Image (cartoon, rainbow, N blue to C red):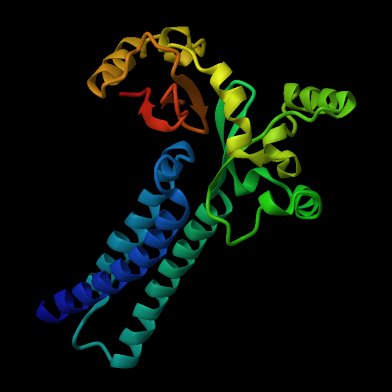
Length: 253
């Protein structure tokens, strides 16, 4: 039994180190708050934890027998480790493909843009037409302004596409502008929490007002903007004077 637990412990330690490096790198680079929440990354991470920190080491505990030939034992452990590696690669690839690339201000809200939202043709156009804000594999999440184009025909085309579930301007980095350039437009969109019209906030407004007061914000002031992704929306709270983002409040608490 001592041999089994030693093999289990070594396997668990090795799995934990590899998983920490992979998930830690993704978190520190791309999934820091609010990325992990808006992307619903916690739907993928538990699967990796179960496979790599539970099932793999437990299988090693079951098959580790000191009377088993070393070559046979090494083969069995290699098979388990290989299955773990495949699961880890699949999970890591899923998180990489869905990593946050931009937090955009567009029209009346903040919106998450993931790598999977921008197709290759749009990436190529952005690199050619708007290189400073084009997405590259090494880019960390950036805050940008995504206004609709001034050309009436382009504007109408994008609005029609978005209306029917197609690409929106937030999926077209060729139109992106620096965050600071959009601050005057952002100021005009700030409203008191009570005026947030999203139906998902109806039951949460009382709690959100309490959260704002607890953090020293006046809920009657026009300082909030909705922030959306795949999860329930967040409420962004800005300093009215400096337009500095002060807080992101969860609506599910």
